[in-house]
Length: 177
Ligand code: GDP
Image (tube, rainbow, N blue to C red):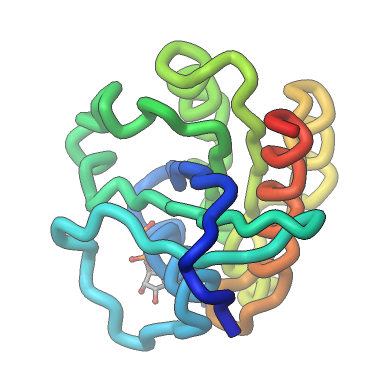
């Protein structure tokens, strides 16, 4: 359960980016509310969700931002990245193109975000392994080259969503502490 919000030591902004329909919104709701919505509509206007966690005895409020569909129009603005010290770049393991675009999303972060930003790459929809189009090794290799953390996860089953976020937040904490 969430700690009482009377004493927040840090607020961490995390941006979730990646192509449309890779599952960004669902990953976010899985982490923030432990929900998966079976008939999710495209995101409209939601800006961020929060979850408060404790790392090393500090109360950390994670403010996790959703693109609200802006990526469809290649219109993710620099305001979206402002103040973010963590990012999750998501692709869909069943859609090769979404992985091929990851390099562009990482470029975007390098242009717009703080140089010390911690980045996690997430291959979502791991529950659809029978339709896999991106070998795990390809992603591992890219993540190593770029110095990113990497997880395959499923917003649907919940597999690795918590681990990916918690590890990201722990690394963000190491940067500020
Ligand atoms: P966004 O556009 O990146 O925010 O993607 P959404 O979160 O709206 O998800 C796009 C579609 O993929 C929706 O139909 C989701 O139900 C589905 N989806 C998201 N995550 C998963 C997952 O882990 N597994 C499966 N099987 N479907 C998923």
